[in-house]
Length: 208
Image (cartoon, one colour):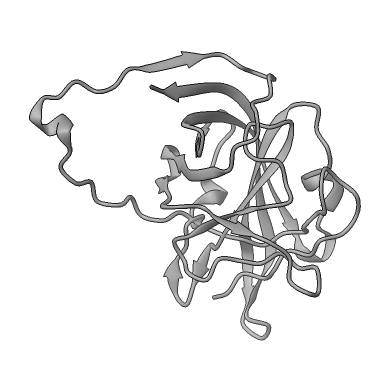
């Protein structure tokens, strides 16, 4: 079950997609580390940055514990010749739209993934179960962890996707998680709707 490419249209922080990605990859098995040998963990410092933008830094991975999302590396997604957003090539991978802000910068950072793919549950399989108040943490290349709090989860028909609402400029750092949802149309091989989770930056951590 393939997720339809997001259509880019209309002005926004950057070229805007219209929406389709998808689900939550299973947590990768952990491997023994120095911590198992009683080596003290490196300290983590925290600061509250609600509404305060972070510098640019590409996303490395994403965690949404309440729906069991623990991704591997986040890939970069560009646009296809028809201006549709590229989509990940497997079920478990999430992708960041490279023309959107990086998570933590001002504006809506876009991360998309499959709800399922070739009959395999996708990285955002349970995105529709996300509730207001849930947290999503994006690990960034500069070592910071941007923490977002969900304030809205909506389902939109693909035929009436609100491009500007989802991809338009925002005054604060925000995050959009997008996948497919609703009824599956076997004739077209696509879901009829998109699920969009909206979240705002509410904190940041830096591992030293």
